[in-house]
Length: 423
Image 1 (tube, rainbow, N blue to C red):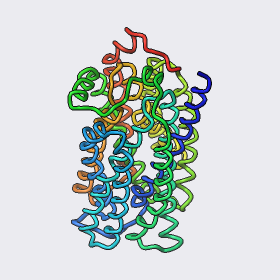
Image 2 (tube, helix red, strand yellow):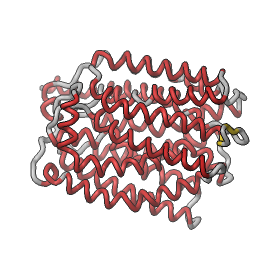
Image 3 (spheres, helix red, strand yellow):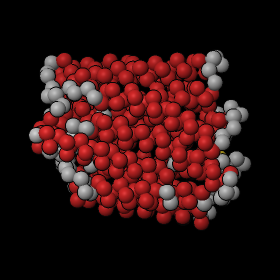
Image 4 (cartoon, rainbow, N blue to C red):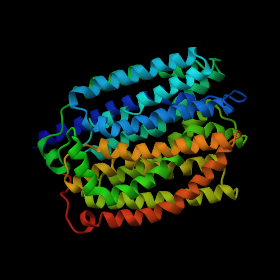
């Protein structure tokens, strides 16, 4: 038994390293465009950067709706091949973006987003359903923070120091992804599946049929709907911060040097990691879900407080970005790697986290698209700092109400039954 536990621990560490490498690679394909500056360049009356990001997010959104079915039904044997095909296609589309006209470039970025949006669910399927899934998920999800900052820093370095043209910088930055994704997939395919004790504790994870998805949705309806609505507002807030941080700093007349974004996000990642690791160590699924609900509430409060402090000039923009980063990711990361994992175990349903994750993600990114498109159409000189401030106040207002509804919907598994402890 001791030997089995030791092997499980080693497997968990290797899974964390491998999956982290793959997803950091994905960010080097997706996020370089967010660091570009296209001031004065327009297409169809819109700022070209806004048009590019909207096109990519539209593609990302479409992929999330596709992923509700395709990711949850993908078998173990097909995961790696699909990730390779999707990543290679996305890099190829960055070459098309560099060579084509602005209009064709928007189409290329739309297809780039479609390719990349399916990778997270395929990747997380390698690590779900294990004793260490929460810990691996925390480790993996820090790639949201670190990789985004690193990709932007590399892109700013390419354009400002090496003087690579804006059109070519995303392609050059994406080359960093190739060894990372290759190494990660090589390692993932050499690690064993969950052991029998893990399958009993966390519920078996397998490809889902249409009936499986219907059963899961019906059982979890009153929890999933309010949680998804929270996630929708949170995604808009997080995506505005992530995609337009460079623009926000420009609006605040702050220097956006290449190391700035990575430096800020490292601080955010360390704080978030400490908080989420403490929750990942909670053994009982019931207590872990309660902790996540409290964490989401704390996130909304911290967003509101930091927004009001910044509005009153009580904190610097750098401190504001750190506080908004921490408050965003202590709620956003659990949705993507911990909360749904624990809920499936609590309800003792067979299936995959990918189904619930992509259901929430699809509506979250759809909301981001609606915001960006409407803002672009009705305001050609968008104040992204103002958009970010207002979205934060909305999140602070609606999240507590929706959490109450979710807690009521979860009353059967949180207060009326006793869940199996994680060993």
